Image (cartoon, rainbow, N blue to C red; front, side, top):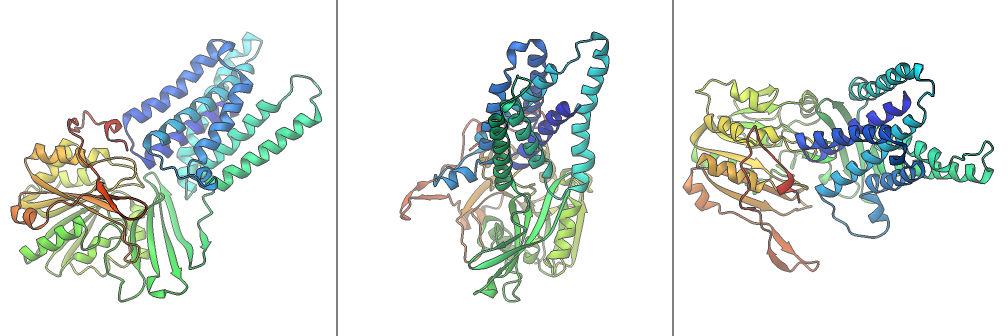
Length: 488
């Protein structure tokens, strides 16, 4: 029962890891499920497909490659900027060899007495189900982070070391056993060092301390808030909102900077410019913000404005209300938090409910909400947008180039558009960001032309503008979407 449970645990944990970092899409689920099932076919078809020592060795190698993708190059002094393909294929390869190892060992332990095969397959099924139930009923409910991933990696490392260094003789050599024990200890130590989810709960550096104030996990992912205190620059003290490992909001603690928009939402960002322009054109605005984060955009509101915040994750709402005061200090005469999927909630609005500005910024970690970027979703946004309104989309993403996706949607709606890339500014706590804005307001488009990202060399000299568009991309719909063409 333990072997199929471990394989099932790795299967679900690996799928979670990839989908929360990149995007949950059918191709991902089909790929991981297909790999999981094909290992059953291979190992139970014939013994020739499973070579214990080989797969145990490959498992240890891929454990280090996958878990140490960021740390090992840094330890070796190598600069390596990996992308979505490296992330996915390393997890796919690891999942395959782990399932081959678990299911191969399971096949080796099948009963010789055929009368016990029913019991054998029953135990195998129960074990496989237990791995999935553990993630769903235990890990999601009781863990505040993806601890089951590290747990699975450690168990896999121990199993691989056992298989790799076991002896076929009845009295194995002491030296072989000692090498196996030391290898297992070294692997566990490396995995904990590279994947330790507790390592950043309290960090002390030369110029600042960082303390984790709160962390929560549910079906939608992990959210946390960290407080940073700078020893020599107390005016820079702040709190940072994380979705997964990605910063999704930040607020200074000093009164003078407390309500200055930061991270991706500065006043001179694409979204900031759009809100400020709309405010200059109308005495009052009706604004929809899809994705709450720390509530940073609430700082743009005036007393005459009305702001609706759409958020699917109740933990994110609690964090924004308990640890940040952007919402409580919001000046808008009317503000509503609409809990649930933004697309469904907006579709249920009365037809006469129209917004001046719709901001789309709903991301879980680095994961992309594909169902919010399809033709049908944008038609819903357009139906609830005033004729002279704006749809502003935060398309900042480390793994995917979302520009051609939203450009195709804009062209399908017959709307003009612009984009703005903003460079990072550590002094103002501005992170590199890219926003795409759809509108029919020609005066706005003339006042704010598109700004491409500048590519510079190590000395800071300008080289070129980074291209954003990818011609020929197929329009995303509820029936079709693929991140393969837009992977960085």
